Length: 174
Image 1 (cartoon, rainbow, N blue to C red):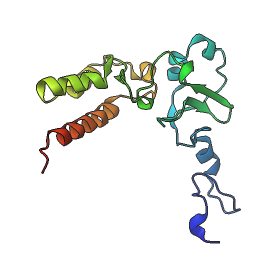
Image 2 (image 1 turned 90 degrees about the vertical axis):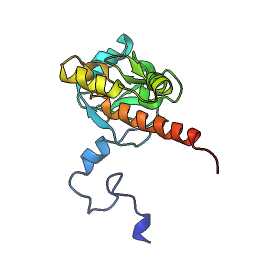
Image 3 (image 1 turned 180 degrees about the vertical axis):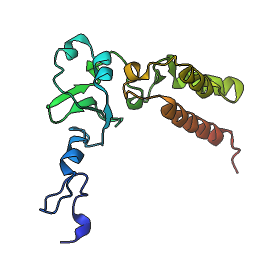
């Protein structure tokens, strides 16, 4: 058998020579999509779950699954605890492709807001405004953003996609 066909150690390791961190690697994989989930504080999970879902909370170490095609949002594999999109009070921007696509949960900004600024002005000041508000201590990312972290990375990523799409449509055909 070719070693190229063996599963990557971070996903599974059927041999006796597994690296020591293997259990942590498995714990970080979404049970549905097998995407690596990022750790999220319990306060974030508690803040965003609907009441019926909150009553099912039994994990301690949750991860956020960013995979767009996956319904799972939070999971704790050790506790066997999984929460899907319908269990949350908010839309998960990273999992949506149709408006409204939330980007900044603290200041209620969407991809449509970025698009509108770019269309009207050719640019947007939204990332700078968010950065200023964060610096001023006016954000609550740890409880409002489903991934439990600052949204600026997602905002900048969406902005680059919009600018790329705009440059493609404005480039004259040759």
